Length: 97
Image (cartoon, rainbow, N blue to C red; front, top):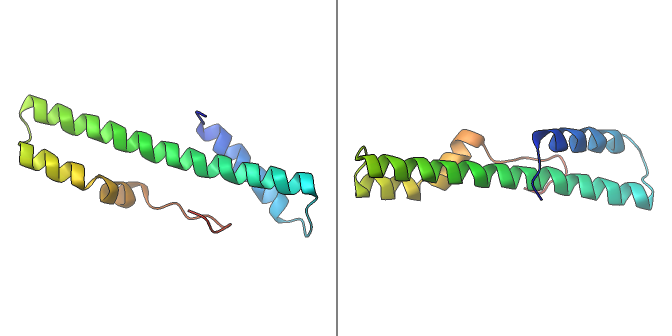
């Protein structure tokens, strides 16, 4: 599933609408869970794409001679930490991440 920022925005709006209701019907509970999955999947895809783009950039820098092999290996090993620092870790009001 290839999600867009618009999909995430719509899902978050619907989640907010359902959050204010004291009780949800079975259909609303299912809808809520589906919207949560859309938001979390979008964030996973965005993070994965960011890391892939960053990996490609590092490879290009290595090919052009701007980085040594050791420097590129160090940058590859720091990708997860860089993603956390630059993108932040997702935090959701429903508790999963």
